[in-house]
Image 1 (spheres, rainbow, N blue to C red):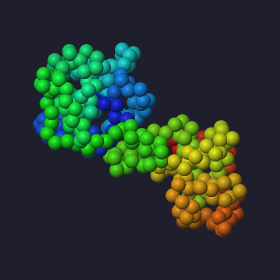
Image 2 (cartoon, rainbow, N blue to C red):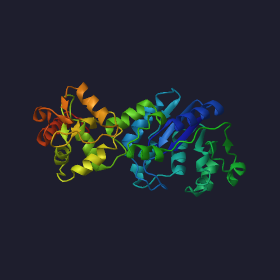
Image 3 (cartoon, rainbow, N blue to C red):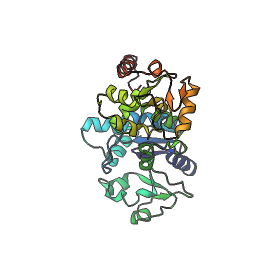
Image 4 (cartoon, rainbow, N blue to C red):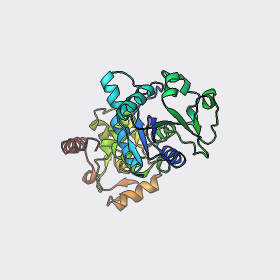
Length: 309
């Protein structure tokens, strides 16, 4: 018996892993395969690149030797040049592994959606559904009893990839909701922010310890010299540990803002050897990286293969 757990995994989170463990325990299956969708047939929210979502699933799956990842939906979608559907995935796997028995895992939050899936009547004849109860979502549906669906005992907490993405966008690190390996990957690749913010964060990450730069320099370095206020707004919502936004100051050497407060900014800069007096950096030109230097650092990073640094 192999459980198939499909989803966008945008990103995969602790709720997904707890659901997977519940399935393994109660269904006594030898493996559970996570199947990230290549494109989503229903959801209109923009998916992060498949490569990133698959990489995060691979990292999370390493936590249990019974967890695997299948890239079959990418393979099928690229071959057909259209959105892949669950029935097509199930039929392809059954053809590929004719002696294997599969079942399909869904959360109780999808009960009302499932009957709208493409060729649903055929799908429920091809594979048995296993429903993981999500705490607070106990919807019933006609097909549960009529089509031999198995509802697991117990429940898992309600977590949402949508809410996790919103947290990141608003500068709140969702570390407690994600496997640490997944959060590190999101941080490393600056995921779930818009392109402008990603450019700002990428350039800011090039400011080394003992140096500072300015909002105007960063704006110029990303090709938006008049967008220095927008740069400040983006940095104020930074939750990535790899982005040292405390090293960005005003053009006159005064410190500017900081989401954790000015005292915290002063403390961090002083620990890194930046002298400060009366709210300004002393001998400011000595410590400042100009926009030309930032551009140069960015080019060197790309040449070394670190495209986001």
